[in-house]
Image (cartoon, rainbow, N blue to C red; front, side):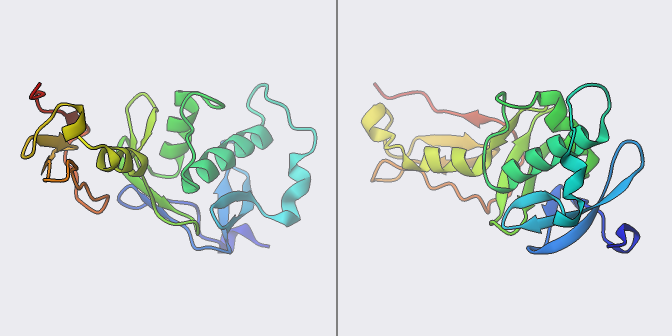
Length: 187
């Protein structure tokens, strides 16, 4: 497959959208171009280039290891998995995100496994916004000392506790801040 005819993996407006079951071009730091495939949230080398994975090590600027890290980070993000502090450093996550055009702030990724929304901090730490919103919505805030009408500021938007004790944050809302502010407890 001729990589010069393929689109590069590139985000627009902090949104990386890759068509499922498609091919893209990946350029290593050495300038080499390789064919990558997208399949249900998995992003990485096309099967025709699987020999690239042989004799891969983690030392120096080995382009094979560089591509392996990048594909694993992007795949984990596309599948909604955490990349924070377990396999890759924050610097590696930040570097991969910047390489595809994702800058610190809110970003989304969709590579055939559904859209995922994250917050990328300047340090390279990522916060799964979808998971955080689910957590905030699932808590019964009245049961833990708040009262109906207390207002939370979630990423710059305000949400009041309803009569059932919940707030109803939507991942589709446009957020303007990177902070969550809790009201004072009633108790």
